[in-house]
Length: 330
Image (cartoon, rainbow, N blue to C red; front, side):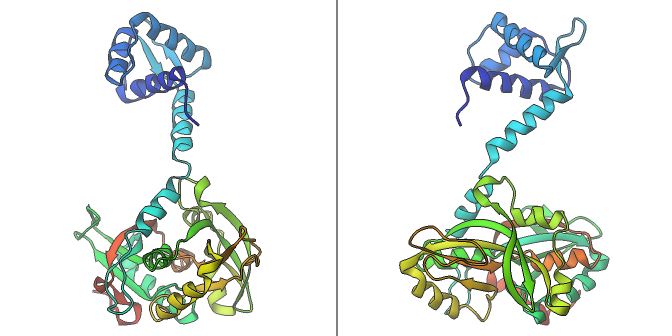
């Protein structure tokens, strides 16, 4: 929802004070507001500061001016989060349209997740990923590893660290889109598995209602037991859900079959109006549930290896990636 002019000015004053790191008076604040497009004078700036004082977001520091309070910082942070709601859905849509994978030549760009780990634990992490691939709970066996000092997405891998790039399940959406099949990713969630079969979503978060990838959130909360699923076929894994037009179901199934050598993890493609793992699609649409690309990384964390993970991180040429079974620790 759009903010009123007064609301925006109050937030901008809080931002100015936070960035300043020192007390500021009304004269300086008015001048800086002018630089942000707010044509107000010193007197009006004082009025806004009085409002912020009453809310507890700012306070006077003797005769030096105002500073932002902890409550003000929290308010500013909350507003920024509110502005970012739905941000992850925009990222998904943007990257999906940039996927250029060609199943005939097996080249082009796909979407990857990236996880930073201790370099000394790389071999154990790769062993866990192989286990996930062999048990069938990894969307793709393709990975890429970066060592300390190497650069990936403009960031140099720190000393003593290694980075693992794994295939993001949103790549599936990108491939479908590139073949003329529109997809609408709706939920990220957790799926219960029994007897090696996905049963139902037990937790979901809408992509358009979140500022972060839901699977990152579920993984951070430790809401999976992927290793147990790999061992005895029961537990909770990460997954996501999207919808496609009912009229494109046959074409989508053909595309997914063509790419199945490198991209697996399709848990269910529903008929029009049919529930998919407990989720009912919109009218004249079909639901598709896919194993989350972070599922094997969740297994790595369950194996006692801490990661710094960013889902849906960027695009990567598929030919630069290697099959997990062909990979050896450098």
